[in-house]
Image 1 (cartoon, rainbow, N blue to C red):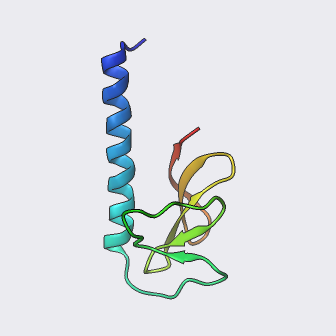
Image 2: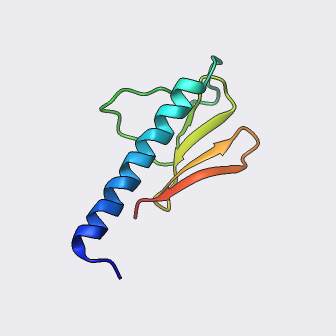
Length: 88
């Protein structure tokens, strides 16, 4: 197992990876309007993600969702899994 310092380093790396993923989605995207009450990326730095709300990339090709089970997940527009992080 990992000692407390190693666990903290791993946790910090996962946080950085999460932020990087969100940034990539926001930067790489083009522009299209979100539909069905979904939110659009990029979001402000103090945004509180609501569970089960899709945050759609500007291109509409991907979306981020904070699922009811506590997972923060990126899907493509066809609902194919791209990336995920269990936050519970």
